Image (cartoon, rainbow, N blue to C red; front, side, top):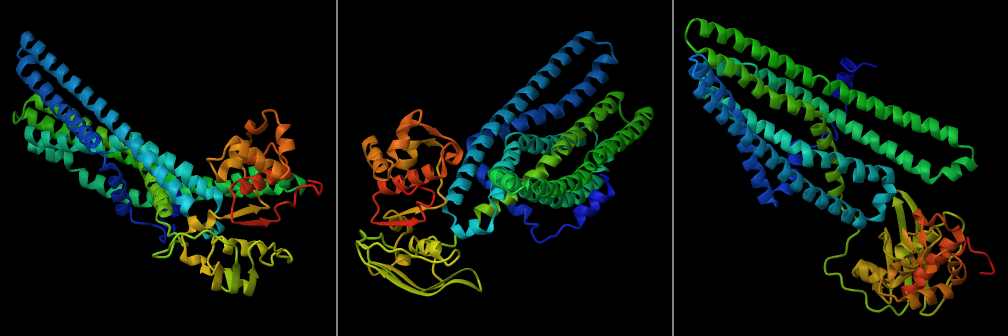
Length: 528
């Protein structure tokens, strides 16, 4: 598989459906920068400072050659060398300032974006997670954010600074000699055409690369989390084959991106060489004919180098820029995801629940046209214990999801004390309903932290009482640090039954008005 034609064809044939609006993506990124006006202003001042120094230096060299070197004026030469050193010092300060302030600004922006992503994920409806892989979400949260962080913290200053320096150098060239300036810039239209064409292909290629990386991340997450099941069912080899296929697709997508990006730097080098040749030939002819001085020709050759040096920098950053734009698009798609389950306008807090629960002719379907519940009606009175029994897939967990309003009914009503659960705020409703799931989840932290999860102000004594209530105190006391024992990822250093008991204690400590158990003791021994 080659980097050239095949990579171009792959990029050119990518689906345009998710092409996105690059201008909108850039506008939103700039919107994150604008609140940091001081750092942004100081970085722009620093960019201008370095650009002025960069543009003035070749003129100083040309002036020194014509007026001091060719005339043998040593004292004048020394003075101009000191001036040149001053220009270099100004250039250093400008570079230092722009990297410093943009670096700070980039970290502030990334902290805000990470926070917004996490808040968004916490607020998304469960239906979103039913349709999106956890690995792809993690890829957006980690990989896409990381590549955007690299751009905002480092690439942005070089990219924008390079453009500013090109403008100042171009202005300086016209001030020194407009004819040589035109000769230098004759290649700019070609540079713009090449950049535009390759950028369009690269954005598509890098978008496919980021998306295929999400698939690889999903497979990695499942492969690690489910390794025990895979080994138990001898699926390891099949899983490896499937991962290799996804990895191959990601590799091919990356090769396509490389095929496009690898053409940019050589193209800019060719244009640089062409401009240098034009200036050397035309400038040399003008110097021989006496139209311009030798110093101007030498200075202009340096101007050509300084004009195309930022272009080369941008070429080196080009891959990062295109990859960052693709990553930013995926991040903004997540941030723009509509929350399908929201509080109704004017929703009121749920009054203290007395406990009368009514399912009134409830119908529900996760996917349109595939009903899970059909005309379900039931009533639970305060203080009453009800068991919902049925075969696997009958909708028992769905009933719990509707009661807590993790989903909205397709038809019918769910009433608590005569109030439709859709008419109250979700927080006030769920605060009074304790749910213990069969597939429980423990967080990193101590045993006490996990029991206290639903009621952070609970005392150590209350935590222990909750654990004793569900029969968990015995095994917790036997742990190395008791209630202060640090749990592994998802409670991996505990048995399934122990994890369920801690989840049970968590629900008890929250002191809910309604307690719902979804096969919560399935992994707990009968005696316990």
